[in-house]
Image (cartoon, rainbow, N blue to C red; front, side):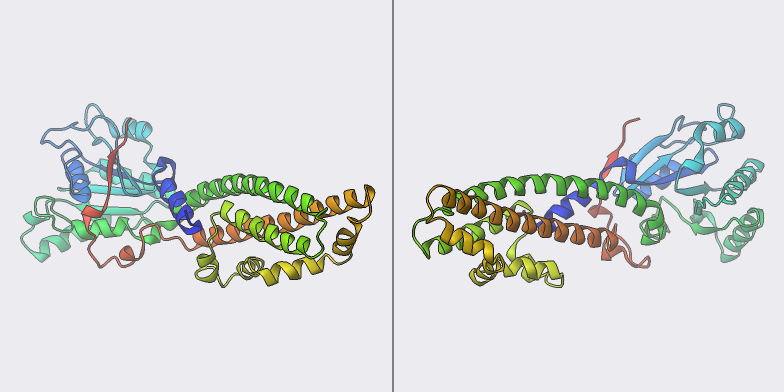
Length: 372
């Protein structure tokens, strides 16, 4: 598995984590069509619908790609007076609020708007989407404009919301609402959650890969130790080159770093060029020359019985260990740089969803209903 694939898998796993989702509360009067809106957005009948009040009696959560859409019961009923409803469901815990309506606004609706406005004044802004359902019943442009003027007149000062006219029966206006909630402009909600989870995954990745790489280093350092007493002058140098070459390759593999990535997508990183240089015979020879006096002592000390040979073996081990630890450090630093850049430039929905004017193919999404 390449490093790029590893990171993508990490991000996809994080996207499936409920704790990182953008949470949308769907609110409104009973019978306004909240559940129908959810079904239309998802493209599947997942929410129970009906003509009576209190069809939805508890918060029901649905996962749609990176969203958690929560169908809340209607308020203003015997079962859910608005004051009790607000205390029970605490809509301020959600990131985005859908207000669904289909008829005239009530005092409860205005009180809800006031509650949202008061909360927003604390600095925790919750975007409000105003969704007028059953819009096919509106015969003229003038009727829509009258509704627009009425609802904006009832919004408290400082509270703004985009108005959408939809009809679930004919899918009118659904694409516009869907594109709105899948817009990258809401990244302030999900990005900190993604980054937190990604940093935890990054640190765990680096810990495990460093540990694995150090095991590889130890194996090859022991081989270098044994080669330190190689009695054939010249052959010991060739053996060292082979040992170092294999050690660097093993360490690189432990980090899932591939040569084609170093030469391609990661070539702009200085560390990538440095790692590639040590994967050539010439690069290893230059490294051995940089050990200077240590290499000389190792090469000639082995001809001195007992103590000289022991010193040569110890130097062989120490030089390989130093070189290996440096290579592990550089591989880890490169992996960390790449992962940090990956999350900094991460688009939750990809380029396809970059424009809110383009309709989105519902079949490309996965649907899950979350357990209560």
